Image 1 (cartoon, rainbow, N blue to C red):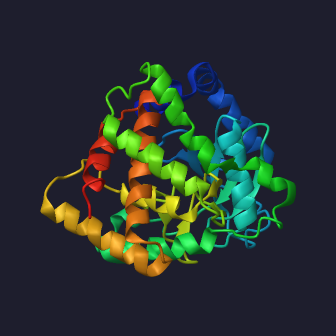
Image 2: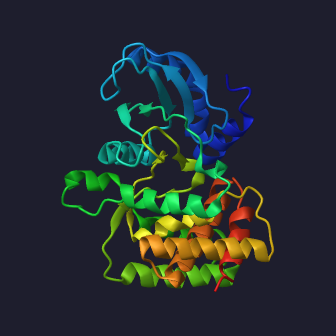
Length: 314
């Protein structure tokens, strides 16, 4: 089953190390366990596996909240670390509002049973970039949660955005105070801007945290998100992953800059953020993503190219 997914094996191994290797070794048994738990049959892995095992499956006896007779679901298996726990907590909180429905989960084992979205086409397939940006902006507002009193003890399951940016201190440590292959001036710019943003008396939100075209799928209930990270912080950070996608190979030239400027305009109109703030958070996410690529050995070049481009947008 895994022989046809070499990128999946490489990504899991590079990201999770020993735990990743053990997860891959145990994966056939884990699939059997999850199948037995929920009575799943016809397990079909999705073609673009990355950090988790994800497969379409048939559920002969539908569980609530699936309508009676609707048997197709998604099985997701991952390494039971904080990130997966946060995803489960976020999906429970969203409860299908703007997001795919979590049907059931086992946090200790890293098992998730999810609603299958149909037709399930990624937003990245939409040719009209301006329309895609509008859809994404409205989707962001649907999943943001402002009422932290209602979260109660569940708030402790989510990550605070400043903790992510503390990772840049590890970048400095790795390169003896420098920034390695990353542009030092841009890293310094992000260190200053995020420090200022976090010092503001802002109203934090619980956000998706990885909101981009590949995590937004079409469904009978409209465009819905999958794979939330469960992050608490300034809402404008959410635009960063969206701005950096869905280009596989980042083109250069005035045409790209024109599209990026249009995205900024649309996000400003729909979300109410200042242009400068959208640009600075987009740059901040790009630098953070580049650092993650160094740390996980999954590649930093694309993120850095985008950072250089967005830094010049006026």
